[in-house]
Image (cartoon, rainbow, N blue to C red):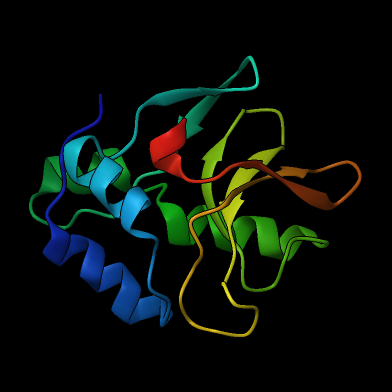
Amino acid sequence: MPYPITREEISKTEAMTGYIFPQGVKERMVRDNGGEISVAGDGWQLVPFLDTTDEERVAHTSNDIVRETSSKRSSGGFPHAGFVIAHNNGGDCLLVVPDPEGSKTLGDTIYFWDHETRRYEPVADSLDSI
């Protein structure tokens, strides 16, 4: 069950990673920090931001964006500065990357990353458009 999250909690992740997440991602998570979405007919689980406001929320968000991203990066072939925002429980994920390349601001475009080909391609202009 997704819970809303405060902007202050999201800011903690941004401070820890050094990256600014897209406004559309932050707004969606403020309403529901997690949950499900559908992209191109496939079901995806949104990856929450870690919420440290109480023990229950920590438990519900412990598999957060930073942890999921770290796991994908260690598997190889994942974009170095990309961040996982959703997964399909099959190894593939949706991600955001810096825009422009090399910046610390993540762009609005949502990309599909295929775990078999290790390639990614745009699937939506923003999380708001899904």
